[in-house]
Amino acid sequence: MKKNLGSAGELFPQSVFIVASYAEDGTPNAMNVAWGGECTRNEICINIGDHQTTDNIIAKGAFTVAPADAAHVIEADYFGMATGRSANKAEKSGLTFRKSEFVDAPVIEEFPLTMECRVKEVQDWEGEKRFVGEIVNTCVDESVLDEEGNVDFDKMRPIIYDSTRRIYRVVGEVVGGAWDAGRELM
Ligand SMILES: Cc1cc2nc3c(=O)[nH]c(=O)nc-3n(C[C@H](O)[C@H](O)[C@H](O)COP(=O)(O)O)c2cc1C
Image (tube, rainbow, N blue to C red; front, side, top):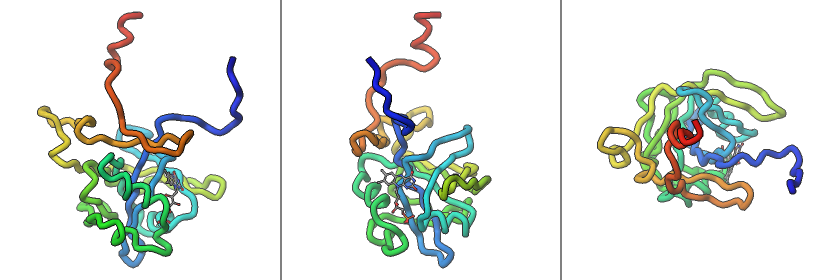
């Protein structure tokens, strides 16, 4: 038996993207974004309402995206609770915001992986904005790379957002090879 849940999506996993930006006066800020994803190999799409981050991205034409890791769940959640309109979240978080070498947006040093994006497209959607960012550079801590230089998610321990229970989960075990497990039915 299936039950109809209506039009709300239950897509899982949802991201825990920490989107960092600068205000017009240069104040760094970060917010938590679940409604976002990689739309092509070098583009990221984020859907955001009327936030400090929205103003910042429009002002600077740039943002960075760091998938949050388990070591920083407190800071990641804080970035989604407080607003840069009334709090200096960068200062309060105690994390290190440094200017990206490639775009006018901050990189948060403590997150192991960051994609630095230039705004490519802005769409209006029911009072929200959908930004498409072109990834101009990705920087990564060597500590989360494997011997071949690939990002090792077992080392990084990225977290995902489970919207059905409003909790964060860590990315889990390997259950099969991609373009491989299906061979059994080919
Ligand atoms: C788990 C989680 C996911 C969130 N995802 C989004 C999102 O995808 N889009 C959005 O507009 N706000 C989202 N928010 C809310 C913003 O992060 C929040 O309103 C934040 O205060 C905005 O910060 P700012 O005003 O400093 O930019 C999310 C919050 C949490 C805790």
